[in-house]
Image 1 (tube, each protein chain N blue to C red):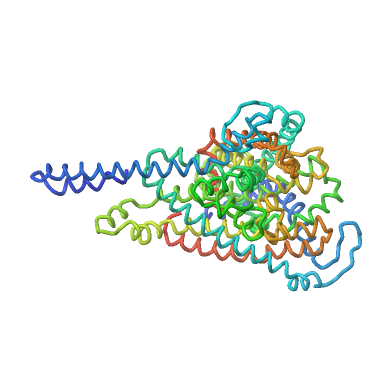
Image 2: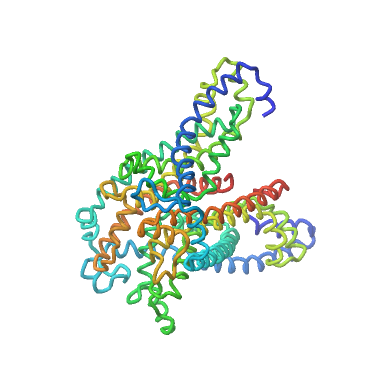
Length: 304
Length: 305
């Protein structure tokens, strides 16, 4: 797009008499341009393959026979079997880790969406006394790293009886997402025109109806982006299950993998298979929804 | 906004009612899982708590005093500083160059975006495991490649040696962050005024000058935003180091995050661990606010974003 305008505008300016000379020049120019374009594509493809190499290595190692893992653990695609995947799934308990990951991620993602959408709407469109203070408190959660309060939170959960429970971990995961979520959804609601709610009010809608029937359907794309973003963050979360689910009954894939690493290098095959099981769902999600994912991250970053 | 404040009292009351209802869940969650533990953190920093004793001894500022005289804190802070400087500069530079490269070829940018962004969405534990294999001293690809290009002398156990471990982990983190920076810059470049770029090209500006005088000023707010995100992330780095080296070998890769974790959960020195964690906040938050201000001012000047 950018490479085209210059020759054409120049050709226009040079007038009829010299068009022929110009177009010859353009052809010579575009030949060189094509070469440099091909070169740039080549560089990009090499870099892309280098970037993807670790992922390729996981797939390759996961699909090896166990003999091959012992002899040549990181040789690429030197043998093929599903043994590692089977043993990770059954002996390695990755089937139950996967279920636990879903049990933690799905409810916490839904909670983040619901809570953030409601709060985001209020902070964008429902002014009342004290609202600003509340908003600052929520935003403070964005600024302060989880690190700062994770240790006291451990003891707080213990005294609340929520340590090592699914509910406790879900609530903490939710709380780590709502500050960003509220901020994110607020930006979407702020962009909507005020005429909309005024018209609805004139038509006799209650405030709750304006929110649920008029405004909510208009921020569906924002909710979608937040859902994908939150799902990924919670699926990948390592610290929360590490700290608050120490017992292992509800161990998700991330800490399951961590427990599996424990220095036993002979288990590289099943470990690779477990890693593959952990990343396949999010890679699929990412490839299918790549537009929403990247746009969610971008608008999240820009709006945050 | 003006229209809202002129709303009749009935509407304002209804809005207040709905607003309080809709913000109740977020406020309950924030108070319960953020404000309470934050206040406890301040309390823990002035007591000597071992995690069991319900009435820990009040020690005043002893934890803070210990923090400033603890040589490991200074060592960990130095590692944080290295992490922040390299871990911020490298993804910004690499990301910007890659974004410009993808931007300049136009076609296929979706595929490139997909490939380069993928590492960013992977869980830290998976990244740590696979890069641990790449750095494997015996059969890892890092050493294989070095041998392949005749640099056998550089072969080593990358994660096992104190003087390379931090940089090995850092390289992994840079690999994982670059995709994010690329995608952000690509979206910013899409808003760059291409007429200006064309005009400067006709005026004879070479590509370096075009980048510096024409493109960079237009994407400056986004540049600062990425800077803020990576910088603040650099203070609270934990996952990837904890997973790949656990702060070792011999504390060589300790940052404040891993040191605080070790103190609190492995040595049961809850008070001291919490104090160390507070240090991260005290260091990170002012940076975040200052950069955010700067970014906002630039945005207000109408330079994009």
